[in-house]
Image (cartoon, rainbow, N blue to C red; front, side):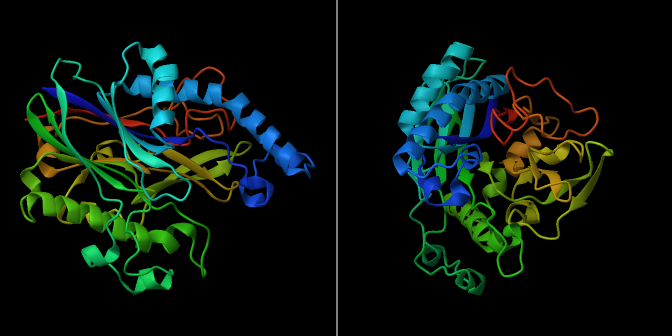
Length: 370
């Protein structure tokens, strides 16, 4: 019996317009920066028109990427609310695949922008086994004090004991697939912010993500008992906003590119990988072919890295020792630089930077459940 499991950051699946760019230039779209818009009412009209004009192409590509993943369960990040998810699933995905995801789950989390994690599930797997939700639980209200995770690093960032650990949520789903239990943990960890006190955005925010990963591990160990997790079927899915390795992209369009792999000295994700608690199954792919996001701030700062993960428990990893995850990259914009041999055919109407399916790529894997 098999299950196809995917995770995908769909990048701002929203039902509302963001007008904050009129007063905050850092949040203003680059198109509107070209125009001198001095009236806020006019700005709102232009911003709404811009978003509406671009969204149809974007969401067609998002749906194509999910359709290509062809998963029984899809873990999503950056979903505004259930209304947005339902409108997208019915208006785009259902029309595309003809067999929608009737089971949809979303619980409002802590994100200041209102983006949440969500899950879409079919009623059964492709081989006919029922997918049954036994229980669902949000951990958005857990504080540093609850798990005794507060430390000086967090205090230096202006955080407090009674602040909530998860910047979005850790959504826990207790499932059975054809009667076989599977626990699913869906997360979207703290994003990398701007440079702070001489540290780049990744390192300055790492204490927050490290607390989040420790909390996820604590939730799983509390569920199954510390020392007993290895024999259980669980998966941790989502956008981790961190990486343990990356591929530096060196060069320009004119000079050509070369690609250099490097391991990071530390990562918040070490909490999962240390002592074999869980396996990042993407490591079964070639070192240059594990990336799910292209980052660039000019030719001096560009790399490929994995931000999107399916971490498997030792039991699930061992049961699927010969399987390798897939990455759907056809929704990437043309500015994304692919290592040799990895090029894909982009979806129709894909742009240089936008429209695109998302800045992230879906990750999907077929799992045998025992």
